[in-house]
Length: 122
Image (cartoon, rainbow, N blue to C red; front, side):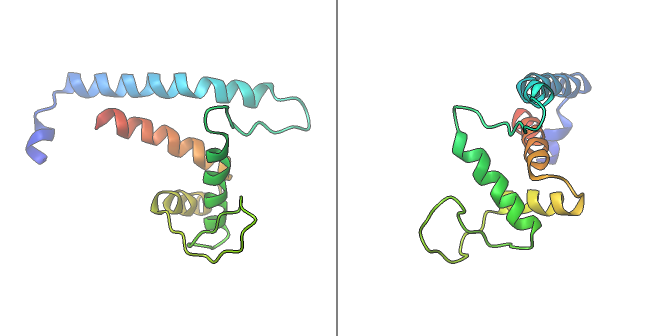
């Protein structure tokens, strides 16, 4: 792996950085527009029509972690349940949100932006 990383030229690294930043900016535009154009006394959540349930579930796992619960429950079911579900990805995002005192929504979007960079590089 180390040898592979050494074969990447500086020009290629700059190209990846520029592409990553462009994708992050393009992907952030709808969210920023929604946030800044939301009417008074309303909150733009970033929920969209393609995966409306996912955003809320991800935020709930981040929030559960911030509240000290490292094992999750599904807050969007009426069935009785025990805390049995662990998701390392959202657990780590929740820990960082707790450490840096970020809202669940902001932590979700920052994580999304970071993953754009990772997926472009990989």
